[in-house]
Length: 195
Image 1 (cartoon, rainbow, N blue to C red):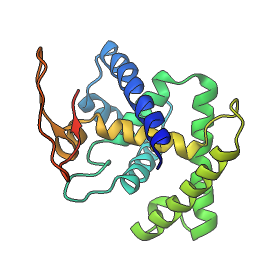
Image 2: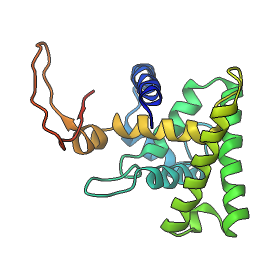
Image 3: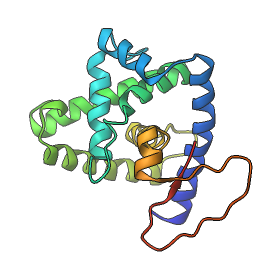
């Protein structure tokens, strides 16, 4: 990833965090409320099965290592809320169509649904999909929509690193309200995160 791509993605994450948090706060939605809604019927436009698929895709992108992965942070539920509540209808349709394409392409390549693939098969499939989306973005016109997998990746990063798990366990969380403080950084330290 080059510096320009990193800055573009960081600006999307920061602006998305501001917009997404306001949307969730305006509705007084908690993660527990989303979990209860998921167990009953799904979230927003997404069925229970689609949210589970999003969790597995997100967990393949950010797996559990020495810190919990994206599924533990309930990133699939986060994505479902953001797409259902914040996206325009055309973008919602494009996202849902992309999710269906991911499933059908996985089945064509591996002979099974994404949920039934091994961790290695999932990783291999998503790596190829990531390569395809990068090639698409190199040749796309400015007015063309983003590749659906880039959208899934961006939402996964946003959802994970703004979750409590991502902000406090994957990143270093240092809370300093109301004052400016410098904190030493040593090479190899985790990056800083906050709400």
